[in-house]
Length: 167
Image (cartoon, rainbow, N blue to C red):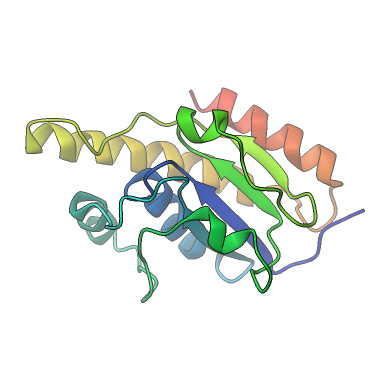
């Protein structure tokens, strides 16, 4: 069965303060309405990392007005948006027992090094830039796929190969 746009993507990481925030914002910006992205974490930190905001601002990426660190439980219950694609961007979130996602979305793991706790601040900024560049490359490649016509299994395989090709 083929999926229909607009697609909903969920970017997951444990704390939902850095990589998943970058991913959500990049998907929304680069997807140009074709994809509506969200982010969440298994154990949300409760705050968006200020260097994530700084990195998005540096690249002119608009942030959703409601950008915040939130639990993945918001996307597993009744009334949650239908999720078509789930991307885990940290190893711990990929290995955790995830909620049962309604509709069996396409899932892929795109591991990105955690920039949030790199010290000193100058090195953290470099780490965030590296995470941003890695996510931008993967997301652009994913959006180049014919998501409207490929079967879900082919999209999943392509998402996994995008990660491998962008290492």
